[in-house]
Amino acid sequence: MRLTFWKRRGVERKEISTNNILEIVSLIRARLSRRVRDVEARERELFEQVVRAHVERDQERAAMYAEELVELRKSLRKLVHANLLLEGVLYRVEAVKDLQDASKVVLPLREVLAIASREIRGIAPTASDELNKLVNMMEDLSAEVGNFSGAIITETRLSDEARKILEEASAIAARRRNEKGMD
Image (cartoon, rainbow, N blue to C red; front, side):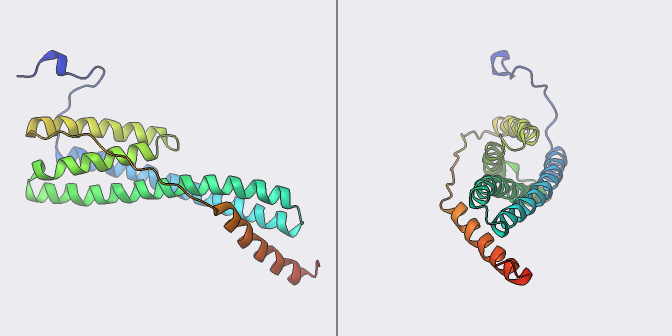
């Protein structure tokens, strides 16, 4: 018997199965993969703008693009990390499906999904919301099986990356200037 105060508001109750989880995670992963490709393309464009600014000897503009590139790369790392986490989840859920041992595997998977959701919250909000729904489904499964625990999130911090981008772009720009005879 499930008490009414335990129900989540606005969340409809679905039958939880490994097939549902596999389908949802695969869909979210496909969306994230598309987003990763888009961000990678934008990263290449921005780096090319940094190089062009160096070729034109516009250090201020190069620095501005480099800072923007740093932020884009942070987002890209989070997207790629979340995508890899989802790949791991897919493999484990498939193993659960094969082994029918959900009670021992659901809790760590739920925590991984919660971390992935938090990492991409500001970058890919739709995917983050989908992951949160999946986390809620897994919490229901955990409650039915008898496991429940909160997720822990770790924050990563990057340093001196803009300087590294500028150095790399400067070297490429110098090489291009030499090739074109623009000294």
